[in-house]
Length: 326
Ligand SMILES: Cc1ncc(C[n+]2csc(CCOP(=O)(O)OP(=O)(O)O)c2C)c(N)n1
Image (cartoon, rainbow, N blue to C red):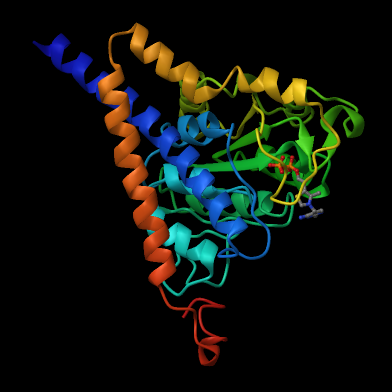
């Protein structure tokens, strides 16, 4: 009986991981469409291809733990449970957005879900993760901080300062580098003396591992291990998740720095297709259920876009509101 129940619970959890990745994929496709239609202004960085990292990692932390991220943040925000409509409204710059329309795509924020941003300055949020970690430690809250960043951040001064500080103060921070092989148009091998990014953490005596970032369960399991380490007062942990963005850096990217063959090769390792296959093999999913999930997600994303469209723009008179905590 217990085994049956445990199996059912496990299956529900696994289906939920798939559902979250599918939601991110569809949300991002819709965002691209809305950008092309001029509904979203500024920069737009899509998470398509990297879904397994955000979903797997977020599944490994508690609801009261903190998450800090970089500007490619829609996927992590959705995985954290921020409302799709409020995220889309933020992309549209509307008052109903998660950041009241002030932040846009790169600055999603929801303190109620301990999703502490969304930051556009590459590497600039790693010290913030340390600050949150220090607060957790000093206040003995038992929480940890999960900090996402890209491979482009690892040659920034803040990266090294943050890892050093996290090590000497034994801060409960899990540093998660999403190595999608490129910082804008630059391959990581061109700019990193040590392109195996996880090895960098050794210089700071922080345990580090690399994981297949296209495998949602592998990501979840390694982040769980890292979280246990950090929560157990053993200090920071470093993970390099090797992944790939299927789309350009932002919406305006001619992608002259990589070949179509390379993109195609990675697309064949699509994290959603891969996980769907695994669930089918395990008997947890069939075609009918998958299609049902697809149409439910389609509706959520359509509703999110309609909500954003119908929401008001901020009034000029409110320009100075929501800048600092009120
Ligand atoms: C300090 C700083 N320098 C330069 C930029 C311009 N810039 C925006 S995104 C980006 C690439 C970052 O790549 P990565 O961290 O690997 O993230 P990815 O886009 O691959 O998710 C750069 C250089 C910036 N935002 N901040």
